[in-house]
Length: 456
Image (cartoon, rainbow, N blue to C red; front, side):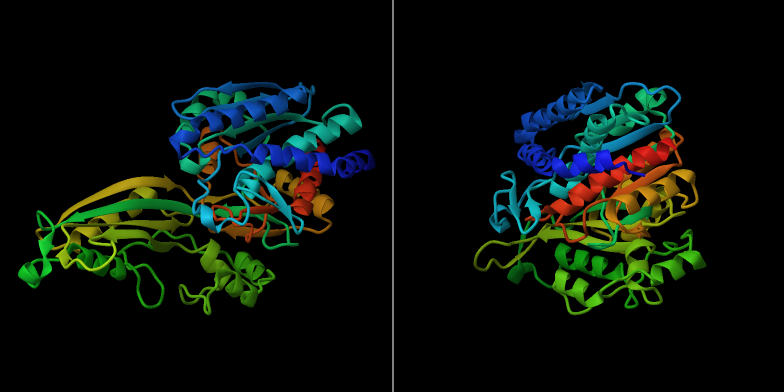
């Protein structure tokens, strides 16, 4: 449900909304880099200021890391309460030489705005702010109560978020939660995500000889850490695409028949996907479709590897050390603790006796499934149809959003709406990140409609 007054206000203020987005995107709020700490704080103050302009009571809450912005709308007596989560921090922009325009000098080309954070998550979060503005300007008051919870550490693992949730859980409990930090299924196919994969991420550090050795003098008589590590990494996957860790699949919750049937109807353009990825074939676990592999099956990937001499020219050396970063995407019923246990055992069992191995737990997230059959979900479905002009599809997403489980567990919340306005090819975390300006406006329309739908 979206009134003509609200629709007209959104359309008439399109250019100004885009200008505000560009201003927001120009703040280099890179949470991972200490030299941008002040910029992260500046972005938090920008969000706070925009909320206060709308009549919200807002504050910047200090944490052990970057601050969290908390804003609450003026009370609407008897109306439901929606908690809106977003993040104002962004990924580092590297490699800079691959950007067509500077990452923090927003540039509009071909109907897209290009900048770091355009789709992840500044542009998507701002749709909620602009929806509030549009309703207040057109109707005079909001139809429901809102809390905006906006953090500055999402891109570095949300280290301070759980502690904040626990401390403020009583004031954050709501009838539903909305998070727009994902994407549509594809351009022109809006989606509601009802499942997310979890994550285990480890670093393996391996040392065998005491020091780097001359490969001519000592080659053939000692284990080479790089070769030992390469053998280990190759052994994690079987030829059929499955993960070789014993017990890895023991707790996997199979997809239900309706899920597989629904997933099979999604309009995947395989050739377009290959072209975007720059590959000639798509691989993975046999017996499952591409979309099932991407969103509903667990995986193992090597994310980085290092060791030995990597400079210019030749250096005949057996390195003392080698290392790798590996990640596993988990699906419902898989336990992080159980996967960590079998991973550590597998590594230990496949190392030579003189190897010194350190495994560091870098980050983790639990998998998520939310019910498709709820009043809040049906409200979101109607709202997206109002904003985009077509019904959304329902998907399970392959990525992880750790805060979803934190919100689910600490706030005892099951009505979590994962609504993505961006697209899979927007380049989140990549050079030339972008956000379609038409989708930005459609997101504002959908969000405004959602407020009315949830209010009944």
